[in-house]
Image (tube, rainbow, N blue to C red; front, top):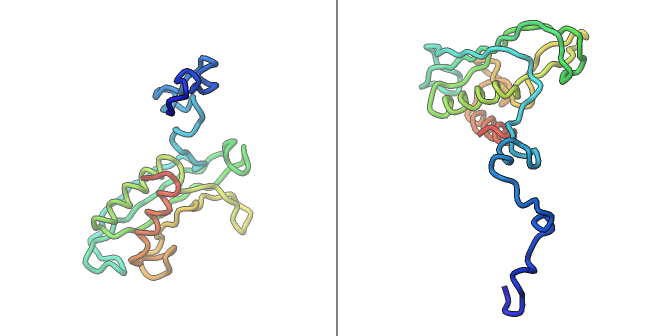
Length: 170
């Protein structure tokens, strides 16, 4: 502040109106501007479990395999889904990760994303049925072969961590 400026002239209109800055409580509960809440998607309710398979995963010959199982019961679509009130088919989807340090980190991130309802969505398949499918985060749904989005390779763990980070999962 220069010597010719008075400190009483450096007030923001918000302060002059008696509002002041948002409190930490307001920020944490989204009352201020909605930016600080937990991101939540439109994934239907389901369950995520995982187990260690005593075999290696292609591309990771020195590690066991983490098999992640996502189970969804059939149900009715809610307002946040593409066809509210219509039924959708349930199902079980499996994904695979190497059982190593990075694989365990990705597993923890995927679990967080799952419970924030970001991994799956309801979509209409080629037969016209509404089914559960993966969302914007690719999952290794094959234990062998494939490209970065289908099967194992060394770049998958980096790629999925980056995509999860872009979706607010850290």
